[in-house]
Length: 427
Image (cartoon, rainbow, N blue to C red):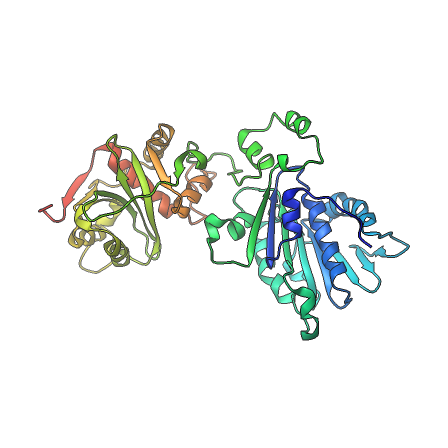
């Protein structure tokens, strides 16, 4: 039934993926919709069991009409399928039915509660990052409950990718948070993410396309040409931070005599710290991070396990001089008692947020700060934080704690001000 079909390299990776969950982040013109439709049809033809239903979703009914259906009409003949002759395409939303095989249902994913069908063969979600993130996340959690297989049919589903996402990268949204290695690490081996920039597609005139879209801002070009995840909101706080410039594969070979510099933020259950070394030119290399420590005791324990505190200068959140993790000591007292070489803070309070942001951006712009690749939380936060409607750094995403640690470290190292509380005197 199937004719020979030619795919680009990323498209072929998507089509042949054996991961249970496959994501495809693609530029404009990379063939996202058509590739996901091919995958849906091939999965349908692979399992000649009408009781299993293939589901194809777009963010809205309008996109079904404008993108999915016209593309489907182009794809079907490549599989020898002709509507009205050997398959039907009826309903609202439409259902493609192939006799002796089964159906592919098309729907919009505006309401996760409408994810139906007791036995779903595979899910295919197009432009998933254009679906509201909370809706997409709720839907993602429901999709797997529909992947039911009878024992006698298991052989049909061996190494099948059954949940398939395609999208342009619309900021640091659903696709980034659920697929990118910097976020999920190796926690979900059943997932894979395939990237397709515009130059990977041999079927379009790339040069003309790029010229026609030369007016786009640089951030949008990175997203829509290179298929990169970038901050799509206006007003990035750390606008001088560039992953390709500031993130390094350099490693720190630690020993107990190495001088370390630490910034830390106090927030119960969300204590955070970043750890750095300095070179002879006073440049910082941040090589470790701690996030979501429960309290100051937990934070100290995590640092003490790894490092010789007698060689550590720590720049804490100055409000810790008042905030009490225990009834007898302030957070800064706890740091002092733990034996840090120096505990440096401003006794009058934290510096102005705007001043520390300006200092951080200045040091980033002069390449005075580098961050090792393993500091995923800090790197992601620097890329993602934007200003809110009041012109303040947006704290609603929960990424501000590790950034505050970064600000305190940078201000402490480069401002040369603050009250010094010495820990161990003999060092």
